[in-house]
Image 1: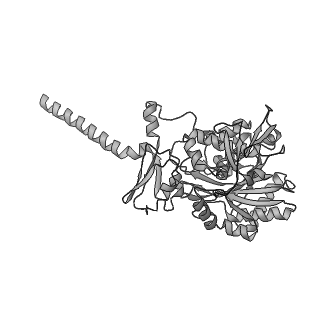
Image 2: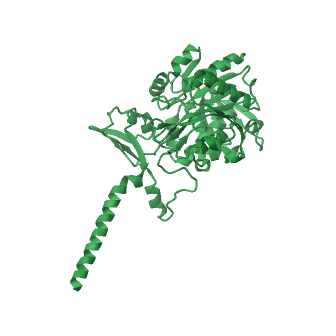
Image 3: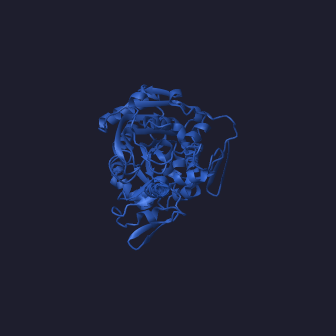
Length: 435
C-alpha cells in the first residue's frame, strides 16, 4: 500500500492486484434474525443474536465507532428506527472499552438534515445517551478528499474527517424503495456521508454512473482503513420495509427481519431479493460485487440464522413504476432506441392541489431545473436530470415521477382513437359510393 498526504488529501493506492483481506473477510456471510416489532428489549435481543452469529463479540473493543443511520423527515417508517440506533449504542457501551461513539448523516441540505434529526427523535435520544450527532452539511465540518484508484465512476470522494478517523463504521440502512433509483439499502445509505451530494447528482446524472459512484463511496471508506480487516459493518432494518413511493412517501410493508454482514452488496442482494426483485437489475450491487468478487446470487451466499429466506420474500412487493437500472437498457426492443429511451424517461410532475409553493423543491434541485412562475412551480425538462431530489425534499408529497410513456398515454389513446375513427369513416364513405 502506497500512501501520501498533500493539501488535506489522503491518497491510498492499492499495489496488490488481489483483494485485500478486508474485502474477503466474511464477504459472502449474511446473518438474518427474525424480529416482529421495535420493542427495545426485542431489538436488543435481535442485535445480540446478529453479533453472535457473525462471531464478532470482541470486534468492537478499543475502537472508535461511527454509526450511520438513514435519516429523513417523514413518518415513523421513513428512517432508521431510533429504537434500533439507541439499542445498538447501549449494547456497544456494555461491551466496554469503546474508545468513542459518533452518529451522523446528511439529507439534501443542512436545514432538512437538522429537521430530520429532530423529527425522527434521533438527535434527542442520542443526546440522552451522551453521543455526539453530526450534520455533514454543516459548513464548518472538516472534509478529507480521497483518491479512490479502484473506482468505477468517481475518482475523488470527499468524506467527513470523523468517518476517516473512525476505526469502524456501522451502516444502519432501512429496506426501502426509491422513486428515482428503484431501491435504497446498504450501499446507497453511505451516500449520506457526503457533504457534496448535489454535485455528485450533477456529475453522475446518468443513473448507471450514479449507482457505480455509490459503490465507489464504499471503497473510499474502506481505503481509509489502516488495518487489514473490514471497516464497514452493515445492520439493515427489514422489520417494517417501505414499498411504493419511497424513500419518503411509500407505504409500510412488514418483512420481519434484521439483516447484517460485512459486505454491503451481499446485504443488498438479500434485501432486494426479499422485495421479490432481481439484484442483477441494480448496478450499485453489480459494481460492488464485481470488485469484491461476490456472486450476485442469494443462493451462493452463506446465510446464517434464518436460513429459509424464501419464507420472508414479499411476492407482491410494490416497486416504483420506473425503468429498472439494467445495463442491457430498455425492454421496448420493438421500438427504435431513441423513441424507447424517450418513452422510458422519468417524467416529474407537480400535483398543484398538494403543492403549497414552499419552494423546497427549487432549493433542492441540483440542476436548477425548477422555478416559480406566479402561483405554480415550473420544471425545465431540458435541465432535469431525473434524480428525484425534489420529491425527497417535498414535505407535502406533491411531486410524482412516472415513465414519460404513462404521461402521454391519454393523448396517445385519444390520437389513436381519432385516427382509427377517421380511417373507418373514410372507408365507410368509400363503400357507400360503391353502392
